[in-house]
Length: 324
Length: 115
Length: 91
Image 1 (spheres, rainbow over the protein chains, first blue to last red):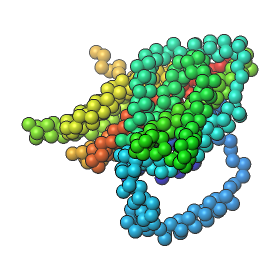
Image 2: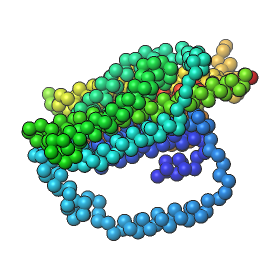
Image 3: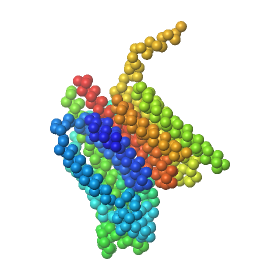
Image 4: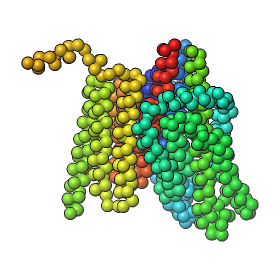
């Protein structure tokens, strides 16, 4: 809680980002202590990793310190305290943490825990709930991520003229000879990170993992490459149209699996329609939609990063031009 | 044989935790950024290696050992490069050489040792 | 013995957070966060063994990688910032 207070009270945004990284890690450690492996995985990769990186790129555009507050926010403080107090009062009625009589343990959860192995045959119950019992919700999540990517593209797309590209290249080259050791180490690490992302993706049935975490780890490898080797080199490797097509393909894959189930006579996203043996159909369905989720998450993260960094480069270029 | 493995695992864990704590004390008590970097960078990698070797010896399963060795190998690559990058960036960007911060009275104390 | 090591690492993590909040310059804070990250990797591995669930090692691997990438991210950001400031100072 000390970390949370420090985050709110400090004005230097870079220090705030560091502290947010620590906060995300502390949350991940709590989840580990509560024996929730998948949630800890997602929190560690997204909250402590990608969020920090994206916020760093954002403040490279906006500047490092907060604007001073112009009025005393007493009314807001009062509203927050009253709402918080009401919420805490509401939770006093809740059953104790983990007690067997709590409503969430009575209705749906025992069915998932008891029947998941026979109906779906996947050892990791979180994956089976996320990908099969509640597949429609996960479809909604993927569409939300895709929409966020489209929103960022619509707001921040930077059209680069050819002479700007040369100037940006020279700017990047002059900064990068100092990073020789890092470049060599990174060249060895990046294939490993991508391989690990694939491992997490396909091992999500048996251990913690799944599409979301794998997409985030894959995007982290792309960020690392772009940060050390220059944005223009990274764009030549993975160009803008490719990641846009990939983002759309992921969502399309997910939807198509549902539509194929529809065409075979069952409900939308009912995987037992995909093959003659229902359990094998479930496996195939889960594999395909996790792949769709992973592809979309990785491409949308790359889109967001490239848009932010492209803006920040343009601003850097303009600042250099203005001061000359 | 089994107790020997358990005892050596406990020994590695103990040495690792001691190094860890000394690194922590170092980061709190040393006066300057570069000295703190020295404390953390050296003890961090070695403590990680010791604790991971202790865990490998503690556990007989094969897949878990492979993953632990993977973490060890990655830390041996990553941790020194991160320390290098940090020190390099600090020196290049903002912080001057460490000697410039010392007050004059400290440099005078060196002189009486010369006969 | 595992529990003693876990407690030791928790103590070190609290020390690192203290330095992160206290540290006068930016690089002190980056150093403290880096150290916190490495100790978290160890903490997660140890907790996995203490609780008998070695699947946590995947999280430890991810976290080691993310720690590295974050430190490099902060350093590249400060490079850009310094470059902009030097560009303004020169002219």
